Amino acid sequence: MAEQSKKWVLMVTAQAPTNIAVIKYWGKRDENLILAINDSISVTLDPAHLCTTTTVAVSPSFNQDRMWLNRKEISLAGGRYQNCLREIRARARDVEDEKKGIKITKKDWQNLHVHIDSYNNFPTAAGLASSAAGFACLVFSLAKLMNVQEDNGRLSAIARQGSGSACRSLFGGFVKWVMGKEENGSDSVAVPLVDEKHWDELVIIIAVVSSRQKETSSTSGMRETVETSALIEHRAKVVVPKRIIQMEEAIQNRDFPTFAQLTCSDSNQFHAVCMDTSPPIFYMNDTSHRVIGCVEKWNRSEGTPQVAYTFDAGPNAVLIARNRKAATLMLQRLLFHFPPNSDTDLDSYVIGDKSILKDAG
Ligand code: DP6
Image (cartoon, rainbow, N blue to C red; front, side, top):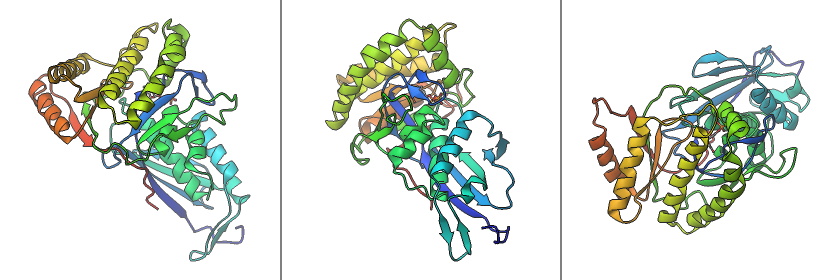
């Protein structure tokens, strides 16, 4: 590489969707490696509406690693970025582009610097799992650039070190993050539960209650919960293991009533442990509570659930409708209860299906 011109730039662009947990991850047993205290299950969303697009570039003319998030330069100093870069560089392989006359050896990668440009098409850090799509996309695009030959399961263990929930965005459809047992985290990986086309009738509506940045990040929130909540251990050791088994079965059987009951209960329990934290953490607001009331009332009046709700570390509602008809009726109800331009209106709606990871090549 040394003799080659300093003018070349090699680039890769990738797109990764975000995911929403239906059985939540909340609490770490290892902060540095990001190892969870319980398994979790999520659904990956349609990248047309909620995704990160990342372009990674390498050139001998770059003299340091740099990153831009939503067009603003951010620091790569944090351990999470460094951990991901280090793990990918350690697996880098020879790359040759004959047309451009570029040859990079495994060894060259240790001294070459990268520029990373990442863009979210949805509010960052508003409880819409932006870090999940962000780190999944970062790891996936760097792996492509550096010709890393590992499968998405192995890559998920690297994305996990950027943000826990990111490991699940390496796959489409329903995905489980297995907490694993190993101290080095080698078995703490994401696994797809079903084919990504499985249960395609489901429609996901995101009611953006507020696109403002949340006050307590997931990282510090879950740390405080683990340190102070008396309920979290019971949740992680007793409640979640049972729910994981039941949820896997409900997904396999496309059993919407069980799926909805588990999804809503798990979201509510997650917010209960947040409230059981000292000082208490309130991610939902009055509008979120009213959305829950609206769904619960409608589900009861229908005799069988039409829609499941779940809220991550923010006030925005993720509503999973059993089919298109239920989604349309849900939207009508939301528009009726939260009329646009009223005191209680919602910021926006996003509707989409389940998705697959896209490589923009
Ligand atoms: C409520 O993955 O954002 O969305 O691992 O510290 O980066 P870190 O946390 P993060 O937490 C996500 C929490 C959650 C539940 C979930 O996605 O499972």
